Length: 227
Length: 219
Image 1: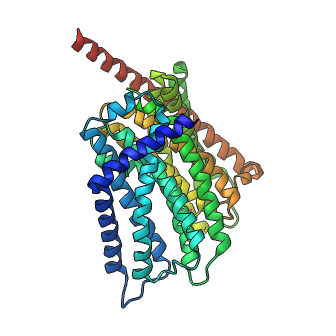
Image 2: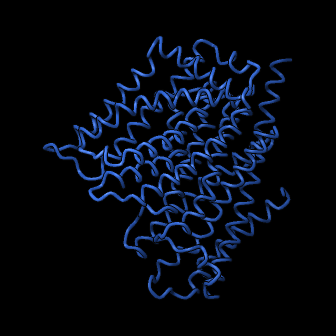
Image 3: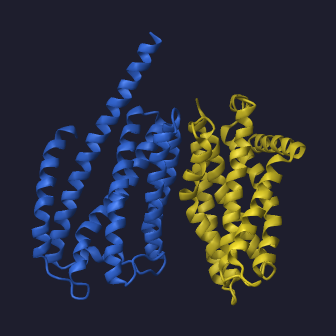
């Protein structure tokens, strides 16, 4: 078991080393996410006031758009340098490679969210500091569910034609339950009279989805990555 | 199974031709009137939509984990039928909802998940169509995720309070409504099995032809 996590750790560290040197994915993803939020604020905010309930939706739309961009890139880099074969050939558990990739992606998306959440709070007057723990739980579990499926699909699509268009086409329908949970839960916290039990219910559901998605992904990664 | 194809097609075609008369003979539902009759098509297609998802998921798992090449053909056939029966469900549902609830569509869990499942089928078929080589295994992975959604649709209506009637109303239907319902259900099921057989057979032949082409190229 320790070997499993060591491999995952090394894969993540490798990705992070590449990322720290180029900062390519972090900067492009962050810039894209910020642009999405700005476009929404141009479209929706009138005279400094946004309609109720939109902040949560916009936050999650930005996260999912930015996430798709990041997922595509992490594996595109492996394909471009033809290092995916080396990664697969390494004498290590395939699921450990998946977990390493997933952790790297989660770290990147977490950094993006640290900028994104205050930005949404600022532009849409969302009360982001009233329930910091519950909001972080929603963000963490929602992002895990989304990234778990995304990492698997991005990995599988590496060898497929027209992968750039197919990734969002496949990813969004499958992750809709996670998106609904994230948006509804966040909206329950952002509304004028916050609904704590509702938010807690959605956090529970997101944890359930995360377990289902991560288990299925670990289970399918091995056979789909075998040539 | 293949021997059943022709009789099933003939029988289900005959039964579906007779269905309008049988549905017409059933009594009117007291509050919803005529529009309730769409139920005799809505319920069977909705059930077969879910069956298609399960068939597709199970065969994808067989293909992915047990390397059963023929299972892939069954999965594709089930996915295409799921798209068709899902479309029937999603068209008849709003027609009924407009009269029963006063709205065409609500974001109720069961409705939402049916739409999502339909989108998953559509995405799966798009992947098979445009993915090129290697998309069969990826599709199988995708179908497994789709199947994970199915029990959730079924349970969701019992967990949350919703507009959609509980599935437990079906056994309590009066007999005069039960007869056309199960008649249509039988007709739709036979059609489903027959089409599944035909489509899977076509897919197996296509795969065989492709293998022959490849063998000739190498020779």
